[in-house]
Image 1 (spheres, rainbow, N blue to C red):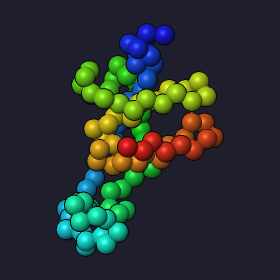
Image 2 (cartoon, rainbow, N blue to C red):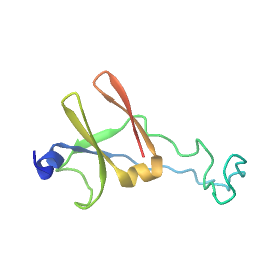
Image 3 (cartoon, helix red, strand yellow):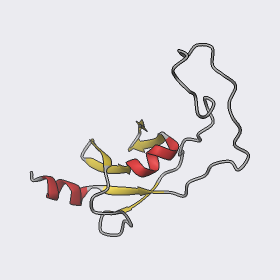
Image 4 (tube, rainbow, N blue to C red):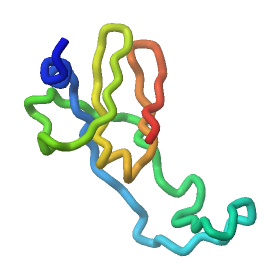
Length: 103
């Protein structure tokens, strides 16, 4: 199947992004090497727990945008990497099967 045809089968994840306004510098993590800087504390970025999808033709996403595509049990979904950069985890389901899209 051509990539363009496969992409047209995918649906695009859309959701509002949320980040607390009271962002603070996290405490240093003693488990990280000195050359690493932790920007936000663990658990600070909320996962998306109830993703809403639209068809690829309805998605307001740039044609050149990258997505994480998943095909499972005959169903295909696409998760916007722009969105995953801000949330990192989408808890989703393919039928009765729970899945986590992680970036």
